[in-house]
Length: 377
Image 1 (spheres, rainbow, N blue to C red):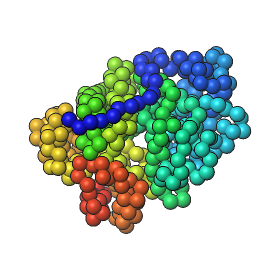
Image 2 (cartoon, rainbow, N blue to C red):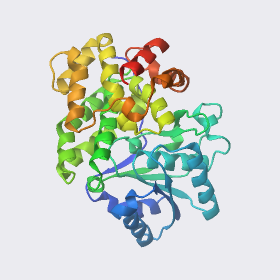
Image 3 (cartoon, rainbow, N blue to C red):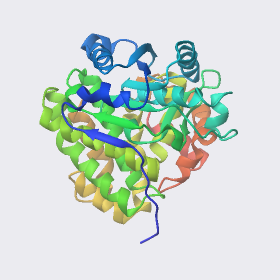
Protein backbone atom coordinates (compact mmCIF):
# COMPACT_ATOMS: atom_id res chain seq x y z
CA UNK A 1 0.00 0.00 0.00
CA UNK A 2 1.44 3.37 -1.03
CA UNK A 3 1.66 6.19 1.48
CA UNK A 4 -0.99 8.89 1.10
CA UNK A 5 -2.37 12.04 2.69
CA UNK A 6 -6.07 12.81 3.14
CA UNK A 7 -7.24 16.27 4.15
CA UNK A 8 -10.74 17.68 3.53
CA UNK A 9 -11.49 20.75 5.66
CA UNK A 10 -15.21 21.06 4.89
CA UNK A 11 -17.97 20.99 7.49
CA UNK A 12 -20.62 18.79 5.85
CA UNK A 13 -24.18 19.08 7.20
CA UNK A 14 -26.07 16.13 5.75
CA UNK A 15 -29.74 15.19 5.97
CA UNK A 16 -33.25 16.22 5.12
CA UNK A 17 -34.11 19.55 6.68
CA UNK A 18 -30.54 20.84 7.21
CA UNK A 19 -31.24 23.65 4.74
CA UNK A 20 -33.36 25.23 7.48
CA UNK A 21 -30.15 25.97 9.41
CA UNK A 22 -28.76 28.11 6.53
CA UNK A 23 -29.33 31.41 8.30
CA UNK A 24 -27.71 30.48 11.59
CA UNK A 25 -24.74 28.81 9.89
CA UNK A 26 -24.13 31.82 7.65
CA UNK A 27 -24.33 34.14 10.65
CA UNK A 28 -21.27 32.44 12.11
CA UNK A 29 -19.18 33.67 9.15
CA UNK A 30 -20.49 37.10 8.22
CA UNK A 31 -23.05 39.87 8.54
CA UNK A 32 -23.98 40.37 4.89
CA UNK A 33 -24.16 37.58 2.33
CA UNK A 34 -23.79 37.68 -1.42
CA UNK A 35 -26.31 35.03 -2.44
CA UNK A 36 -25.10 33.48 -5.70
CA UNK A 37 -27.67 31.57 -7.74
CA UNK A 38 -28.70 30.71 -11.29
CA UNK A 39 -30.86 32.54 -13.76
CA UNK A 40 -34.25 31.19 -12.74
CA UNK A 41 -34.58 27.72 -11.18
CA UNK A 42 -34.27 28.63 -7.48
CA UNK A 43 -36.77 31.44 -8.03
CA UNK A 44 -39.29 29.12 -9.66
CA UNK A 45 -38.95 26.50 -6.92
CA UNK A 46 -39.15 29.01 -4.09
CA UNK A 47 -35.76 27.98 -2.66
CA UNK A 48 -34.29 31.44 -3.11
CA UNK A 49 -37.15 33.03 -1.17
CA UNK A 50 -36.72 30.40 1.56
CA UNK A 51 -33.03 31.17 1.87
CA UNK A 52 -33.60 34.92 2.01
CA UNK A 53 -36.17 34.44 4.77
CA UNK A 54 -33.79 32.21 6.75
CA UNK A 55 -31.01 34.78 6.46
CA UNK A 56 -33.23 37.64 7.63
CA UNK A 57 -34.53 35.57 10.56
CA UNK A 58 -30.92 34.98 11.62
CA UNK A 59 -30.06 38.67 11.36
CA UNK A 60 -27.97 38.32 8.17
CA UNK A 61 -28.42 40.92 5.44
CA UNK A 62 -28.07 39.78 1.82
CA UNK A 63 -27.67 40.82 -1.81
CA UNK A 64 -28.63 38.52 -4.70
CA UNK A 65 -26.37 37.77 -7.67
CA UNK A 66 -28.47 35.74 -10.10
CA UNK A 67 -26.39 35.80 -13.30
CA UNK A 68 -24.82 32.32 -13.34
CA UNK A 69 -25.22 30.35 -16.63
CA UNK A 70 -24.88 26.57 -17.05
CA UNK A 71 -21.19 26.94 -17.95
CA UNK A 72 -19.96 29.91 -15.87
CA UNK A 73 -17.41 32.27 -17.35
CA UNK A 74 -14.50 34.08 -15.76
CA UNK A 75 -16.40 37.26 -16.65
CA UNK A 76 -19.37 35.98 -14.62
CA UNK A 77 -17.06 35.93 -11.61
CA UNK A 78 -15.91 39.50 -12.23
CA UNK A 79 -19.54 40.66 -12.32
CA UNK A 80 -20.16 38.95 -8.98
CA UNK A 81 -17.06 40.48 -7.38
CA UNK A 82 -18.11 43.93 -8.59
CA UNK A 83 -21.51 43.56 -6.89
CA UNK A 84 -19.95 42.14 -3.74
CA UNK A 85 -17.57 45.06 -3.40
CA UNK A 86 -20.24 47.68 -4.08
CA UNK A 87 -22.50 46.21 -1.39
CA UNK A 88 -19.85 45.34 1.24
CA UNK A 89 -20.75 41.65 1.52
CA UNK A 90 -18.42 39.63 3.75
CA UNK A 91 -19.65 36.06 3.13
CA UNK A 92 -20.75 34.22 -0.03
CA UNK A 93 -23.66 31.75 -0.14
CA UNK A 94 -23.99 29.52 -3.23
CA UNK A 95 -27.50 28.13 -3.80
CA UNK A 96 -27.76 25.98 -6.91
CA UNK A 97 -26.01 23.33 -8.96
CA UNK A 98 -22.34 22.91 -9.70
CA UNK A 99 -22.07 26.01 -11.86
CA UNK A 100 -23.48 28.18 -9.07
CA UNK A 101 -21.29 26.61 -6.40
CA UNK A 102 -18.16 26.97 -8.53
CA UNK A 103 -19.00 30.60 -9.24
CA UNK A 104 -19.59 31.32 -5.55
CA UNK A 105 -16.17 29.90 -4.69
CA UNK A 106 -14.45 31.89 -7.43
CA UNK A 107 -16.15 35.13 -6.39
CA UNK A 108 -15.04 34.59 -2.80
CA UNK A 109 -11.49 33.96 -4.04
CA UNK A 110 -11.33 36.85 -6.51
CA UNK A 111 -12.61 39.30 -3.92
CA UNK A 112 -9.29 38.91 -2.09
CA UNK A 113 -6.97 38.04 -5.00
CA UNK A 114 -6.89 40.73 -7.66
CA UNK A 115 -5.85 40.44 -11.28
CA UNK A 116 -6.74 38.04 -14.08
CA UNK A 117 -8.49 34.94 -12.77
CA UNK A 118 -6.96 32.85 -15.57
CA UNK A 119 -3.50 33.61 -14.16
CA UNK A 120 -4.51 31.88 -10.92
CA UNK A 121 -6.15 29.01 -12.82
CA UNK A 122 -2.91 28.35 -14.75
CA UNK A 123 -0.70 28.82 -11.69
CA UNK A 124 0.99 31.99 -12.96
CA UNK A 125 -0.22 33.76 -9.81
CA UNK A 126 -0.85 32.22 -6.39
CA UNK A 127 -3.65 33.17 -4.03
CA UNK A 128 -3.98 32.22 -0.38
CA UNK A 129 -7.22 33.58 1.02
CA UNK A 130 -10.90 33.83 0.17
CA UNK A 131 -14.03 35.11 1.81
CA UNK A 132 -15.98 32.38 3.66
CA UNK A 133 -18.26 30.30 1.42
CA UNK A 134 -21.43 28.42 2.38
CA UNK A 135 -22.95 26.06 -0.18
CA UNK A 136 -26.32 24.36 -0.60
CA UNK A 137 -26.45 22.12 -3.69
CA UNK A 138 -29.76 21.85 -5.52
CA UNK A 139 -28.50 19.19 -7.94
CA UNK A 140 -26.64 15.96 -7.23
CA UNK A 141 -23.74 15.86 -9.63
CA UNK A 142 -20.64 17.99 -9.36
CA UNK A 143 -19.78 17.38 -5.72
CA UNK A 144 -18.51 20.96 -5.57
CA UNK A 145 -19.79 21.12 -2.00
CA UNK A 146 -17.02 18.72 -1.01
CA UNK A 147 -13.91 20.02 -2.77
CA UNK A 148 -11.70 23.01 -3.60
CA UNK A 149 -12.38 23.21 -7.36
CA UNK A 150 -14.10 25.94 -9.36
CA UNK A 151 -14.54 25.09 -13.06
CA UNK A 152 -14.73 28.15 -15.30
CA UNK A 153 -14.57 28.98 -19.00
CA UNK A 154 -12.55 31.86 -20.42
CA UNK A 155 -14.89 33.38 -23.05
CA UNK A 156 -12.00 34.63 -25.19
CA UNK A 157 -10.01 31.40 -25.46
CA UNK A 158 -12.86 28.92 -24.75
CA UNK A 159 -10.51 27.25 -22.24
CA UNK A 160 -12.56 25.44 -19.58
CA UNK A 161 -10.35 24.69 -16.61
CA UNK A 162 -10.43 24.49 -12.82
CA UNK A 163 -9.25 26.96 -10.27
CA UNK A 164 -7.90 24.68 -7.56
CA UNK A 165 -6.84 26.10 -4.23
CA UNK A 166 -7.44 25.16 -0.58
CA UNK A 167 -8.63 28.74 -0.08
CA UNK A 168 -11.99 27.88 -1.67
CA UNK A 169 -12.94 24.90 0.42
CA UNK A 170 -16.43 25.84 1.63
CA UNK A 171 -16.70 26.58 5.33
CA UNK A 172 -19.95 24.62 5.42
CA UNK A 173 -22.07 22.67 2.94
CA UNK A 174 -25.75 21.90 3.54
CA UNK A 175 -26.59 18.67 1.71
CA UNK A 176 -30.34 18.22 1.82
CA UNK A 177 -32.28 15.73 -0.32
CA UNK A 178 -35.39 17.89 0.04
CA UNK A 179 -33.76 20.38 -2.36
CA UNK A 180 -33.58 17.83 -5.21
CA UNK A 181 -37.21 16.98 -5.86
CA UNK A 182 -38.03 19.82 -8.26
CA UNK A 183 -35.32 19.00 -10.82
CA UNK A 184 -36.44 18.23 -14.40
CA UNK A 185 -35.63 14.69 -15.50
CA UNK A 186 -33.05 15.86 -18.03
CA UNK A 187 -31.15 17.66 -15.26
CA UNK A 188 -31.42 14.64 -12.96
CA UNK A 189 -29.91 12.41 -15.65
CA UNK A 190 -27.02 14.68 -16.60
CA UNK A 191 -26.02 15.60 -13.06
CA UNK A 192 -26.24 12.05 -11.71
CA UNK A 193 -24.05 10.84 -14.55
CA UNK A 194 -21.49 13.52 -13.71
CA UNK A 195 -21.41 12.15 -10.17
CA UNK A 196 -20.96 8.61 -11.49
CA UNK A 197 -18.12 9.77 -13.74
CA UNK A 198 -16.35 11.46 -10.83
CA UNK A 199 -16.39 8.29 -8.79
CA UNK A 200 -15.32 6.07 -11.69
CA UNK A 201 -12.51 8.37 -12.79
CA UNK A 202 -11.17 8.76 -9.26
CA UNK A 203 -11.28 5.00 -8.71
CA UNK A 204 -9.07 4.26 -11.74
CA UNK A 205 -6.89 7.37 -11.35
CA UNK A 206 -3.13 7.19 -11.07
CA UNK A 207 -3.40 9.32 -7.91
CA UNK A 208 -6.04 7.13 -6.28
CA UNK A 209 -5.53 5.96 -2.69
CA UNK A 210 -7.08 3.20 -0.56
CA UNK A 211 -9.24 5.89 1.05
CA UNK A 212 -10.55 7.28 -2.25
CA UNK A 213 -11.03 3.75 -3.66
CA UNK A 214 -13.31 2.84 -0.76
CA UNK A 215 -15.34 6.03 -1.09
CA UNK A 216 -15.55 5.92 -4.88
CA UNK A 217 -16.79 2.33 -5.02
CA UNK A 218 -19.51 3.17 -2.53
CA UNK A 219 -20.48 6.21 -4.58
CA UNK A 220 -20.69 4.11 -7.75
CA UNK A 221 -22.80 1.46 -6.02
CA UNK A 222 -25.23 4.01 -4.60
CA UNK A 223 -25.72 5.66 -7.99
CA UNK A 224 -26.19 2.41 -9.89
CA UNK A 225 -28.78 1.26 -7.34
CA UNK A 226 -30.73 4.53 -7.09
CA UNK A 227 -30.38 6.64 -10.24
CA UNK A 228 -33.31 5.05 -12.05
CA UNK A 229 -35.46 5.42 -8.94
CA UNK A 230 -35.00 9.19 -8.72
CA UNK A 231 -35.27 9.58 -12.50
CA UNK A 232 -38.61 7.79 -12.62
CA UNK A 233 -39.89 9.32 -9.38
CA UNK A 234 -38.17 12.62 -8.48
CA UNK A 235 -40.05 12.67 -5.16
CA UNK A 236 -38.35 9.45 -3.96
CA UNK A 237 -36.56 10.94 -0.97
CA UNK A 238 -35.02 7.71 0.32
CA UNK A 239 -33.29 7.23 -3.02
CA UNK A 240 -32.29 10.88 -3.12
CA UNK A 241 -30.58 10.53 0.26
CA UNK A 242 -28.28 7.96 -1.31
CA UNK A 243 -27.74 9.88 -4.54
CA UNK A 244 -26.77 13.15 -2.81
CA UNK A 245 -24.36 11.22 -0.58
CA UNK A 246 -22.82 9.58 -3.65
CA UNK A 247 -22.49 12.96 -5.35
CA UNK A 248 -20.69 14.42 -2.35
CA UNK A 249 -18.42 11.38 -2.21
CA UNK A 250 -17.61 12.01 -5.88
CA UNK A 251 -16.59 15.58 -5.13
CA UNK A 252 -14.47 14.44 -2.21
CA UNK A 253 -12.61 11.73 -4.13
CA UNK A 254 -11.77 13.89 -7.12
CA UNK A 255 -10.40 16.47 -4.70
CA UNK A 256 -7.84 13.87 -3.63
CA UNK A 257 -7.42 11.51 -6.59
CA UNK A 258 -8.42 13.81 -9.46
CA UNK A 259 -10.30 13.02 -12.65
CA UNK A 260 -8.99 11.41 -15.82
CA UNK A 261 -9.46 11.35 -19.58
CA UNK A 262 -13.28 11.63 -19.68
CA UNK A 263 -13.29 15.05 -18.03
CA UNK A 264 -10.11 16.01 -19.90
CA UNK A 265 -11.89 15.40 -23.22
CA UNK A 266 -15.26 16.77 -22.13
CA UNK A 267 -14.17 20.18 -20.89
CA UNK A 268 -13.12 21.35 -24.37
CA UNK A 269 -16.52 20.21 -25.70
CA UNK A 270 -18.58 22.23 -23.24
CA UNK A 271 -16.10 25.09 -23.40
CA UNK A 272 -16.45 25.35 -27.18
CA UNK A 273 -20.10 24.37 -27.64
CA UNK A 274 -21.62 25.42 -24.27
CA UNK A 275 -22.85 21.83 -24.00
CA UNK A 276 -24.33 20.34 -20.83
CA UNK A 277 -21.37 18.82 -19.01
CA UNK A 278 -23.10 15.56 -18.04
CA UNK A 279 -24.28 15.04 -21.61
CA UNK A 280 -20.73 15.48 -22.85
CA UNK A 281 -19.54 12.86 -20.39
CA UNK A 282 -22.31 10.53 -21.53
CA UNK A 283 -21.04 10.81 -25.10
CA UNK A 284 -17.42 10.11 -24.12
CA UNK A 285 -17.15 7.92 -21.01
CA UNK A 286 -18.15 4.49 -22.42
CA UNK A 287 -15.67 4.66 -25.30
CA UNK A 288 -12.85 5.94 -23.09
CA UNK A 289 -13.42 3.15 -20.58
CA UNK A 290 -13.32 0.57 -23.39
CA UNK A 291 -9.92 1.97 -24.41
CA UNK A 292 -8.65 2.03 -20.81
CA UNK A 293 -9.70 -1.23 -19.11
CA UNK A 294 -6.83 -3.47 -20.34
CA UNK A 295 -4.33 -1.13 -18.63
CA UNK A 296 -5.72 -1.63 -15.11
CA UNK A 297 -7.34 -5.07 -15.14
CA UNK A 298 -7.74 -5.69 -11.41
CA UNK A 299 -9.56 -2.43 -10.75
CA UNK A 300 -11.76 -2.79 -13.79
CA UNK A 301 -12.75 -6.27 -12.63
CA UNK A 302 -14.03 -4.77 -9.38
CA UNK A 303 -15.65 -1.85 -11.19
CA UNK A 304 -17.42 -4.21 -13.60
CA UNK A 305 -18.91 -6.17 -10.71
CA UNK A 306 -20.27 -3.00 -9.09
CA UNK A 307 -21.82 -2.02 -12.42
CA UNK A 308 -23.54 -5.41 -12.61
CA UNK A 309 -21.31 -7.25 -15.07
CA UNK A 310 -18.92 -10.19 -15.07
CA UNK A 311 -16.02 -9.32 -17.38
CA UNK A 312 -14.09 -6.09 -17.82
CA UNK A 313 -14.68 -6.08 -21.57
CA UNK A 314 -18.36 -5.39 -20.80
CA UNK A 315 -17.57 -1.98 -19.29
CA UNK A 316 -18.68 0.14 -22.24
CA UNK A 317 -21.96 -1.70 -22.75
CA UNK A 318 -22.71 -1.64 -19.02
CA UNK A 319 -22.34 2.14 -19.03
CA UNK A 320 -24.47 2.44 -22.18
CA UNK A 321 -27.16 0.30 -20.52
CA UNK A 322 -27.10 2.62 -17.51
CA UNK A 323 -27.42 5.65 -19.81
CA UNK A 324 -30.41 4.04 -21.51
CA UNK A 325 -32.10 3.59 -18.13
CA UNK A 326 -32.03 7.37 -17.56
CA UNK A 327 -32.55 8.36 -21.23
CA UNK A 328 -29.13 9.98 -21.57
CA UNK A 329 -27.80 8.31 -24.71
CA UNK A 330 -25.84 11.06 -26.43
CA UNK A 331 -23.27 11.46 -29.17
CA UNK A 332 -20.94 14.40 -29.69
CA UNK A 333 -22.91 15.17 -32.83
CA UNK A 334 -25.99 15.64 -30.64
CA UNK A 335 -24.04 18.32 -28.77
CA UNK A 336 -23.09 20.24 -31.90
CA UNK A 337 -19.59 18.85 -32.42
CA UNK A 338 -18.46 18.47 -36.02
CA UNK A 339 -15.52 16.55 -37.41
CA UNK A 340 -13.73 19.78 -38.25
CA UNK A 341 -13.81 20.68 -34.52
CA UNK A 342 -11.74 17.64 -33.54
CA UNK A 343 -8.23 19.09 -34.06
CA UNK A 344 -9.06 22.09 -31.83
CA UNK A 345 -10.69 19.86 -29.21
CA UNK A 346 -7.66 17.56 -29.06
CA UNK A 347 -5.20 20.45 -28.86
CA UNK A 348 -7.27 22.20 -26.19
CA UNK A 349 -7.55 19.02 -24.13
CA UNK A 350 -3.77 18.76 -23.99
CA UNK A 351 -3.39 22.50 -23.36
CA UNK A 352 -5.86 22.76 -20.50
CA UNK A 353 -6.20 19.25 -19.05
CA UNK A 354 -2.82 17.54 -19.42
CA UNK A 355 -2.56 16.74 -15.72
CA UNK A 356 -5.91 14.96 -15.93
CA UNK A 357 -4.90 13.10 -19.09
CA UNK A 358 -1.76 11.94 -17.28
CA UNK A 359 -3.91 10.83 -14.33
CA UNK A 360 -5.84 8.33 -16.46
CA UNK A 361 -4.93 4.65 -16.16
CA UNK A 362 -4.08 4.80 -19.86
CA UNK A 363 -2.44 7.97 -21.13
CA UNK A 364 -3.61 8.86 -24.63
CA UNK A 365 -1.51 10.73 -27.18
CA UNK A 366 -2.94 13.42 -29.46
CA UNK A 367 -3.79 11.06 -32.31
CA UNK A 368 -5.54 8.68 -29.94
CA UNK A 369 -7.51 11.58 -28.46
CA UNK A 370 -8.59 12.62 -31.94
CA UNK A 371 -9.63 9.03 -32.60
CA UNK A 372 -11.81 8.95 -29.48
CA UNK A 373 -13.53 12.19 -30.44
CA UNK A 374 -14.20 10.86 -33.93
CA UNK A 375 -15.52 7.58 -32.56
CA UNK A 376 -17.95 9.45 -30.29
CA UNK A 377 -19.48 11.67 -33.00
